[in-house]
Image 1 (cartoon, rainbow, N blue to C red):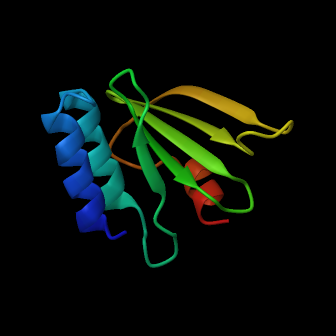
Image 2: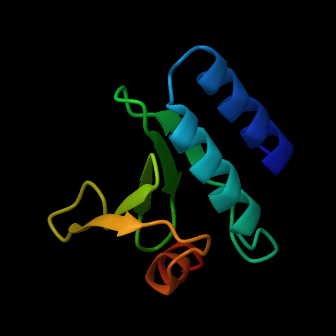
Image 3: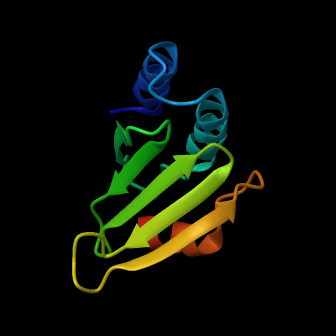
Length: 104
């Protein structure tokens, strides 16, 4: 999947009211900031509540939820070592701790 495919899927989700307008705008900005030269493309899905899920299968399986202008992420998702980080305001940059997880 390329970034253009990801953005196309995001538009489809928005058109069918699967993500909120605010989530769509935040997700576009977030996706544009991902350094794809050093990061694999994530799997992408909706969360059923207007948010968007991005899942990286790295050494620290990382799941990022974009919910309007807020980010939530889990490292070591689906394991007993899962760590949850909630309600991080999206300020136009990807937080360093998320970048470290998705590049690992």
